[in-house]
Length: 93
Image (cartoon, rainbow, N blue to C red; front, side, top):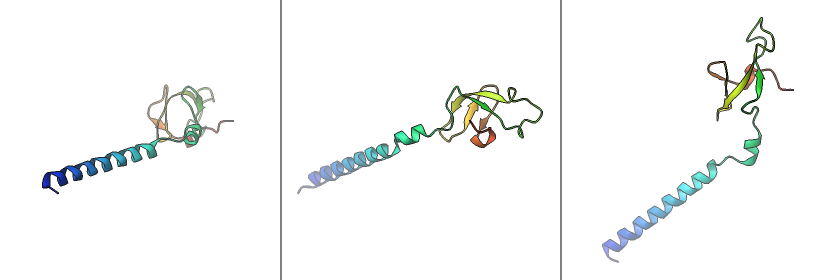
């Protein structure tokens, strides 16, 4: 085989391998249907902080609406700065 033919075949094999790897990684990163359903809170839902975190306030004063759910499971609330974890809130009944 000529040198140019070998180079062309090697380049084609490398390109096909890279494309296959990229598609495989993309396929693995898709969240499954179970993962999408297993969310502890949804945007728009109201959450109440535990009484230990805000002493002296009534339940209505400790209740805020969820603005955004982050990929790591934390939430951003309307009216309160920062990110908050599930452990900071009263359990949903």
